[in-house]
Length: 79
Image (tube, rainbow, N blue to C red; front, side):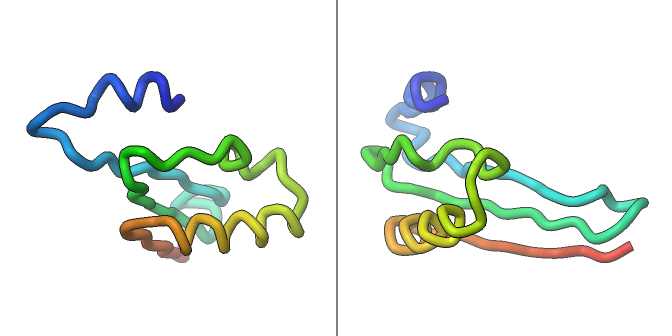
């Protein structure tokens, strides 16, 4: 994914927001969404697909994300 992302950086595009969601959707139950902005040169191969991680590893990487992000947000919405 970073190969594609790097193609978008330009003099007018200095930051890119990564987004993801989890949940059953707005009609079937709670929905969680997160957004993160990393510095353009940040890379950590472990941050990829959270669904393939153990809960322990997910918690560890949450710390990596929050410590390295320029900005992040996590929101939830109920039915």
